Image 1: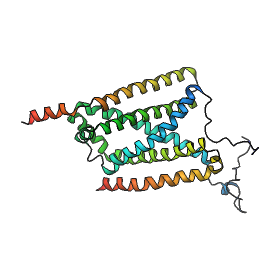
Image 2: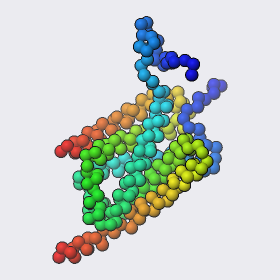
Image 3: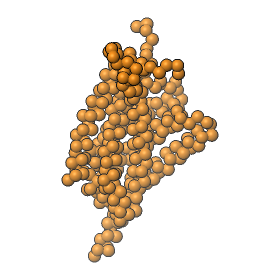
Image 4: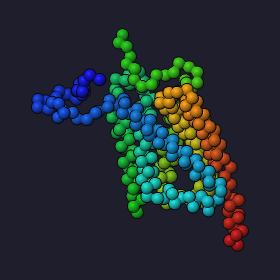
Length: 141
Length: 138
């Protein structure tokens, strides 16, 4: 790389007096990259939990003692926080998956790339905030 | 009209297995939105891990509907997830030997987890344990 400057075309003009390091507001990835990275991370995360979940539900066939003994794991506070993160990952993956399908089958979708991503964030928050609230309330009660 | 269409997202494969995989992702994804979110709401919001135990699962799987629901979700989620992992492997694992190794792991995981998951959902018989518990209690 020959240049250390940050592209600013998506952030509006740099005002006078904010040059050099002062103008650097951190690396801001384009929405396509951000949504793609989040989709992959959440997808692999949910898959990891799914594999664990298949193993634990397999133990249900070994009877109540075996299965109930294992449940201390899922009732542990660390696991219950992980459970909320899992739901966040699942909801994002679901909302962004709809965005991907829209881009695939609606030929004007590319014109609204940024709006669609903000729509994903809005749908995600609309689903996740009430879910997280109910889960945390059940946890502290 | 003459402006070339901006390429956004992953290109649709031309044919063969990759095209089936492409369609499977989208169809299973739409079904999983319904299946997985219903599952999360019932098992993690309406009920919580404090209430769910062996008896809860036994009661739930007394209904063929929930067994079918759970098995369909198992099948779609596992193949959707491992197919996603396969794309990640194709993106990051470059050498031929490691690719064969990683693909072998993924296909083996698909077969093994589908078998143990199906055994759990389809062959679970709570009556045997309940009869034993009643016999021991009386």
